[in-house]
Length: 211
Figure (cartoon, rainbow, N blue to C red):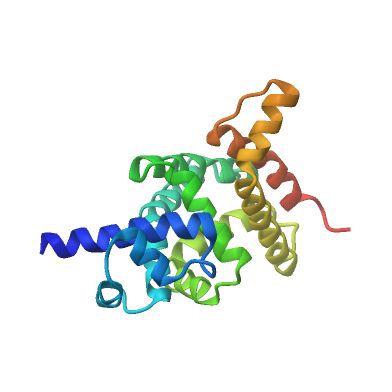
């Protein structure tokens, strides 16, 4: 049983690293099995398909992040019924940073994986996330909508997707951006600093009145 568990973990670890670096579409099962030093039959036994493997890689993060993020939003709402968008987005920072305790560079890897799913139009991932974590997503969307009641639902749909796109681009470019900031402005930022820098921008963009 231990050997089976070790094999499954090796596959997940190898897939996670390759998916984050290369993307889902550009990472073949052959590449994953080579890195994990297992055979293809092991992948089929533990996961059944590449799509199921992708979902399993994301689930290791989502199973931890989503409940904690929801709890932080509920705590915020209980303490202040008129929480600002900045407060709501900021409530997600600690749950994101806690992923570094789950995996080395977990925060960065998780956001990169989400970005890959967003950019590569992985429809099955959207289905998986909304099906398995829908209550958490609903809680977040409602909290954002309650903080910006002047934004119509259709407009909020677009703005939340623009928000996701901004986060995806920022995290995909985080290394280059931090290097430029250090070279040009002598400013040194870690992953937390980058996340906190983008929050006021997101809050302003989501809440700006519709013309």
